[in-house]
Amino acid sequence: MLADTYIPRRLDDQWKIGLWDVDVAAPVLFMLFVGYLANTLWGFAVACAIGLYFARMMARAKADKHAAYALHWLYWYLPTNPVSSMRATPPSHIRRMVG
Image 1 (cartoon, one colour):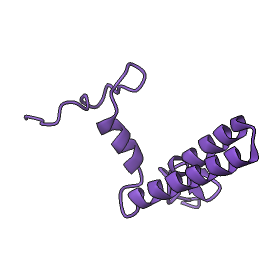
Image 2: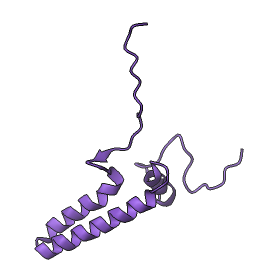
Image 3: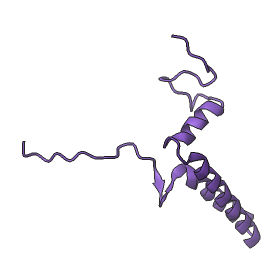
Image 4: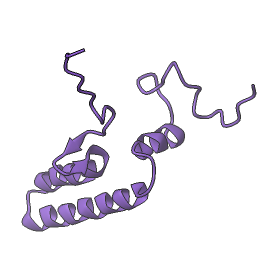
């Protein structure tokens, strides 16, 4: 009865990079890499601006939705392949379930 009874409050939090969720930070990080490959200051600045724009759009799309909204969107709208298919869920092209 005197054992430590610590119960964590959040088990399934999304991965974070700093203050951003991974799916919001991914466009910025990808465009930083593309800007680095451009090898010019203007190319880097434009790529950073595009990355920030897409991150902002992703954050707005996720607002007031489930925490895994981006993963759900990817499941329903991208084609499946052997790497991304799941055994426990039906294929995403089956939209109507009977039974």
